[in-house]
Length: 130
Image (cartoon, rainbow, N blue to C red):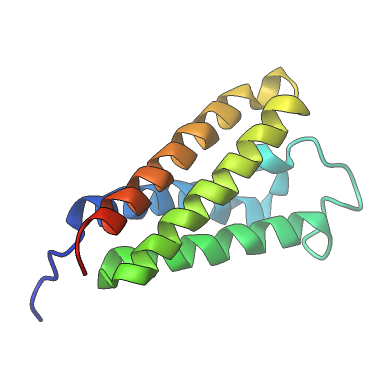
């Protein structure tokens, strides 16, 4: 199998972001309060059948898209992974920064950094000819 070197930097960016998010998402299935985005939820919203489950499912979907883009290097999938990382993390950063307390400020800043890196990944792919 030949290594696909197209869009290597954006693929590395979204792949690393996806792995970091995966490390924060998988443990949250056992204990939803371990995820910074779910720390302020209370029962019954903390159940995997309610808000927490929808939140974690959304995260896993975006993580999988980003990982598929990072592995395959397909132009549009890499861009979709970058968009997913930018939109989801930017959205979470805004709400955690505005609504969350001091306990989620670090996660909000990390989300903002991930959003910027997602946009950088999109621009790097977009600017390179197909």
